[in-house]
Image 1 (cartoon, rainbow, N blue to C red):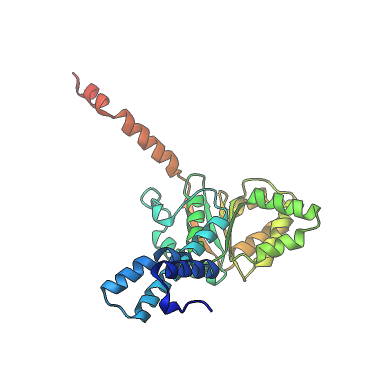
Image 2: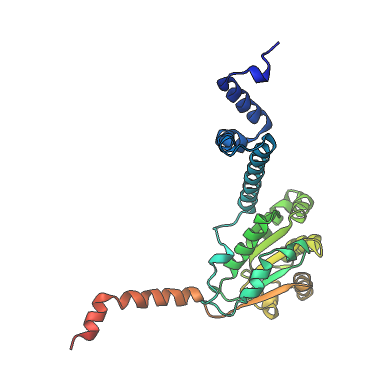
Length: 273
């Protein structure tokens, strides 16, 4: 028989804890039990208090890792957060509404979101930022451009895997679809994403970003009836944000160049008689 646990030496107990943490997959407990045990001893904490603190740290770290994994699996092309959006640069964007959307009740309710505006007005930033917020709230999110989605669905149809791919998109809590309306789609090209929209209708959220107002979507979805059906799917009970027409990226670039040209040398020249 092995030695009783209360008879183990300190090194043996450390080894036993290490082994148990590996088996039970408790990396935070493994890395911090010594630190927490030392604090508990100094504070004369109870055994239950020590265990509560240690397990709470494990749960917190596990949740943080899960959120980071969900953000990573969403496939965002670059990191963007809502708190980094410059509402003063684009006053057309309603900050209060964006803040409310950042709490993600609309995702829980399966509501759509439409971001409509010209290039450079912050649509993709808001789309990625809201998607990131949803992932950090524990929702499964997928980011994809409209062109990439159509190509993926067309390849799946050719491989007779379309039903499986559509079902996979149906299981995602939030689909972030960027650059909708940038390319013209024939009837087949429009029917493919329409099947995804139908699969998700009134069950799971879709957030889209488009540089064209709804009245111009017929230029991208060339079949009038299908275009009307797509607009209906994406706007029913939707949150709609119009980001405007003035590119704040261009304004920011112009302001930066103006500031650079008005540097110390420029000021001296200006003041020279």
